[in-house]
Figure 1 (tube, rainbow, N blue to C red):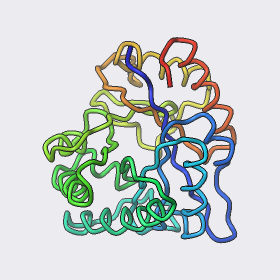
Figure 2 (cartoon, rainbow, N blue to C red):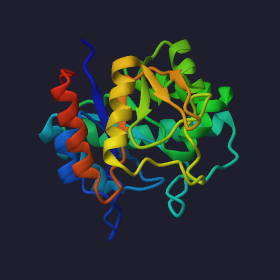
Figure 3 (cartoon, rainbow, N blue to C red):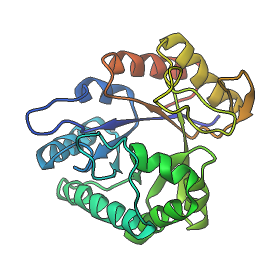
Length: 248
């Protein structure tokens, strides 16, 4: 039986501001995507989060973003493929320094927010990101929205690709996530979110907002760490996956 991976965006505090409850969430996940300073995070937080992952046996990933601290990296910017390439190299390199200094190794790269969404549909941006990851370290796994342009670009570049699905987001008929600007973008009922996770893991399908079942590849499941109930939600998903025999 295929095992399930649960990932979460972490290390998103910076300066005097605390975002998320990394200490609790870390206990229920297997992979962490650590902010690299552009949408959140700072050197102290990066070092602390890397150590937290090592101490809990959680795989460490870089979570590079657009340079948009005020907008939390969720606002689209007009960038060239070359700029996308540079953003990935720069931020992955920054986090990798802390990982190496701590005596561990980087596992994966997952773009954040608007950069992630842009790479899901823009082939040139996707290929630039995949090439950056490949040039930095071809042994790294690229996390990408299931079936997206980024997933295809990663495979084309020869990278290991983890097709990512989202526990608490709704899906459109083309496999894209419902934009956060729409009222039905988030699943706020934990039970419904867990039902969606189990459907995606078991049958490799997801039910869209229109009620249509579409195919999806579920290699890694994302839970968001910046919501108030993040740790409890992650624990529920972890327990359900264990109960169903998807060993973590």
